Image (tube, rainbow, N blue to C red; front, top):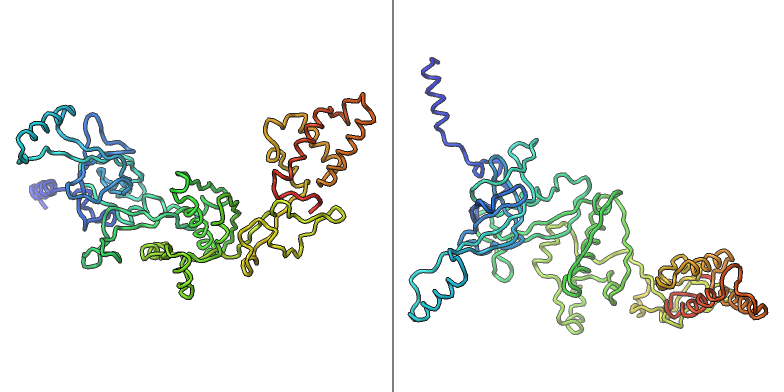
Length: 450
């Protein structure tokens, strides 16, 4: 090839238009091309695009777009995935008064104006992750001006780092995006009500992060009674059980019930058995079971809506119904008097997994800060509690006898103010606080050794 031909070839290559990053094949599975562009990235002198957030104006027909949806935009060589945040609507008005006066003119004309003032809806997007065209490059470059698309399931899973999990994927949440599900022919799928189905993506937590040897924790916040905190906590626990069972691992959950009887029936199915349909219709007509969308979500997670297995309930006794001690001891082996327990599970056939829980004073004194008010637990009372431990006082019966001996000591030694180094006032205070301890713990504290 001569020099002229080489120059012509080089010029021809330079004249070829560069394929825009959002049209490159490797990024096509990250964006919902079928739905198309839902807006365009916009940046200004006052609000430029950054590594952690950017802005885009929404297309007029992007009516399903809302806060919490996940979208994809692009930098020079990477797809940038983010979650939609604060929306703001702009017009060309400089002040609110402009619209106020314009509206009064429209009212005076008493006709509809032929045109409407243009407005745009601008969303803030918080960046979740970026996927560079090269797998060995981690990019945090801001997005460039260009189209914005709804993220696909593949994009959402990538953004949440499932590819970097060291443990099993524990299903945790179901994310609903603003784009519709389509079949192979491109037709929009509908639900049982005939409404279009939105794209739903299972969200996962790393097993090693949630319950691993160096685990974090899960925390639920929200308004009491409205935020379904308990419901989701139970779902996540069930998800952990089913996931780790497939991994041939075992895990247990200890729950402290502080909110009524709901948690006492976790061994019962959420989906009514067909043979019990009539009973449910009569006794709980408002409960319809799990709907189609719920069952589809469970299927997408790879989970089953099953009740908890190997469940055990530990209930305290009703106040005044705790067993009496015999020879300063209480035996709970072979316990059958479930009516004495402070639990809603007392009917025949409902008590197989119910067990009594009862403390002796020995157990209770391990947690003085839980038994007495903070202001009562000064150094003097702490010292007296340790003295009881040194004397091997392990039961309420033994404690009462000890107080009788102390009272006799002060009765015969009227000039004495101390017993074994503890002042009389401290002992009287301790006697007063211990006297109401059994009523305070209501059926949880026994007189003898358990």
